Image 1 (cartoon, rainbow, N blue to C red):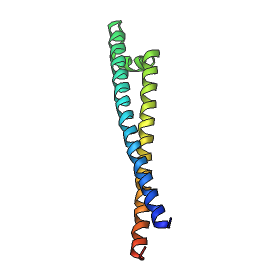
Image 2 (cartoon, helix red, strand yellow; image 1 turned 120 degrees about the vertical axis):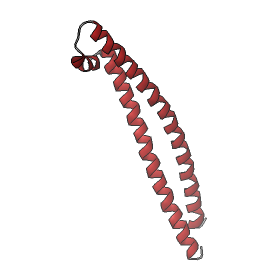
Image 3 (tube, helix red, strand yellow; image 1 turned 90 degrees about the vertical axis):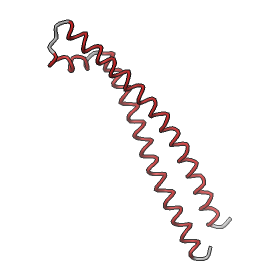
Image 4 (cartoon, rainbow, N blue to C red; image 1 turned 180 degrees about the vertical axis):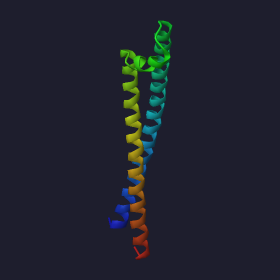
Length: 113
């Protein structure tokens, strides 16, 4: 194989990686949304429970966030956010790699192969 064929194969592999990474990001987006929903509902419930027990609204949020269940759900939500952001950065890196490979292919074609 000459380098032109190698570059086309590399481009094809990079595009497949991009497709798989986008699918992974879609899955992580769903998990992030679900974990965010659970966290916010738990925080709201805890906030109202605290307020119903006489805690002033000004102190409720900080105390609700300190609740063990709420804190665990926030931790899970933050982990999902980190994974989602990592997928996004990987997509940017793969796109950059694809643009570089495409540029090299164009350059080789301009030289006559």
